[in-house]
Image (cartoon, rainbow over all chains, first blue to last red; front, side, top):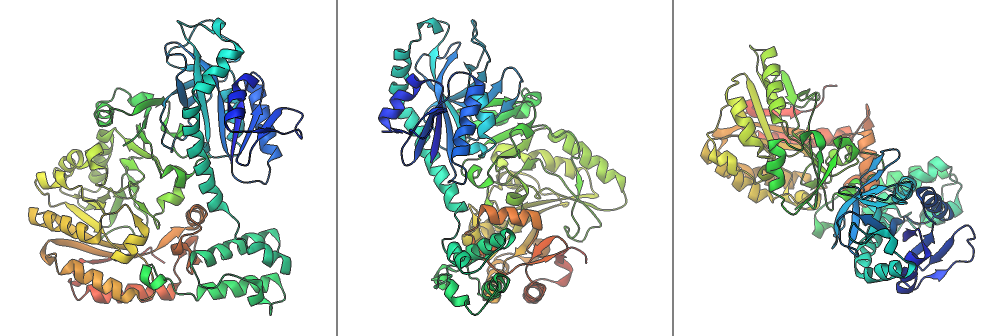
Length: 276
Length: 332
């Protein structure tokens, strides 16, 4: 699953079309669109709006699967060519001077650059950095919910010293995002893969619910049960864990003890032939 | 190949920073004030980062030399360790680093001279005693040698310190510098081993047992003193046979004359690190076995530890004199 935050509807439009996202009428605070593996929210301009939209999306997904986060939009740069897509490898909030370093662990086909978020549009260009108005708010909020390898900002250069921001229109913005779809795809797909990996790691063993239906486990005991069932799966045993094998135990505590005794007695072998 | 190199602004112009960066001409340089802004912060995932670790170049400001933990040593009374690098290029599932750090990125402290000065001063504290300095605690001593050039910088320091001993602990085949250098008596190149079956399952990216033995033979022929570290010993059903075979495989190839020391150690991990490791790799068979907790450490059950240690000790005694043997066991 990936959550995408854009500031403007004209930035979102090419994504909605390309990824065939559907509007979600349940949300009225922000415009939201979604597919089975993607949610897009249009935050409005500014870091506060971006932080609010990010938090809104995270809160509306509470308890759901692990998500990647991508802030996508346009940014200015003194000398990078208009239309170039750049992944942020360092984010700076200009007002607070706070810095973040996203963990880039996936292969990327575009270059990367520093991204500085400012509170107001600036007339002059800063040296050696992209400039936008949302990324720091987005990142600060998303970092509350996810590890840094799954939070990224991808910006398409919209203006520079030669092509100033006065020339930007909704139409040109949409066109620039549209023209960068291949690069956007190359970021989104590995992020989806990473979030899928994390989901697999964090997955609750499916039998857990069968056990919980049979006995009452406290929160502490649920953690213990999850740990034991994961051990069971890690041992690649022929039989799957089943509550039916423990029906002679009346309490959840006795069940946990019985599972532990069973697992502790299992032989460990790293020899592939023996394990089969 | 690193796509990104994070560099502390303070060492941006350090000659070693420039040399290392030259090895990665395509890497993008990202500057930070302090390496801790990137390394080991909250909200990082070691397992994901291990897929594509970044490189960080930084300065170590203090505590260049630290006391080695209890039980970490090979007979000396004064045991210290120093880490010019944090994290390892290998991915051994039993390694405590994956539980200790949130980040899998590699940190290289480029101010080698400060480490060297600290080693000289530490050795001078006890001029009439031997001090041991272990370099392979937070990283593999040799595995990143082509980038760090560690040995060519540190061997000369130890060559002029007769009461200081250096242990290079490794699983690496990066021995080119050692083979070009004149061996020094106060350096031991210690190779870590688990049986091949276990190595294949748990030591990801590590050269095979046979390749490591071949590297040791070259070092032996060149005159380097060698160490053997069976630490940690990893349990599996029928461990007796695979450890017996491992010892025979090694000692049938290596001459006992140049072996400086052999040590055995049991698997032991601080509880908090162990919990992190299990969270990162819940599907890992190593963590699915029975473990006990003893004084904040997660270990195999005591009887099993004793059984493995006794068996391996008896087997080793068929190959080496008792004087070469050291048990790496924390005191009770």
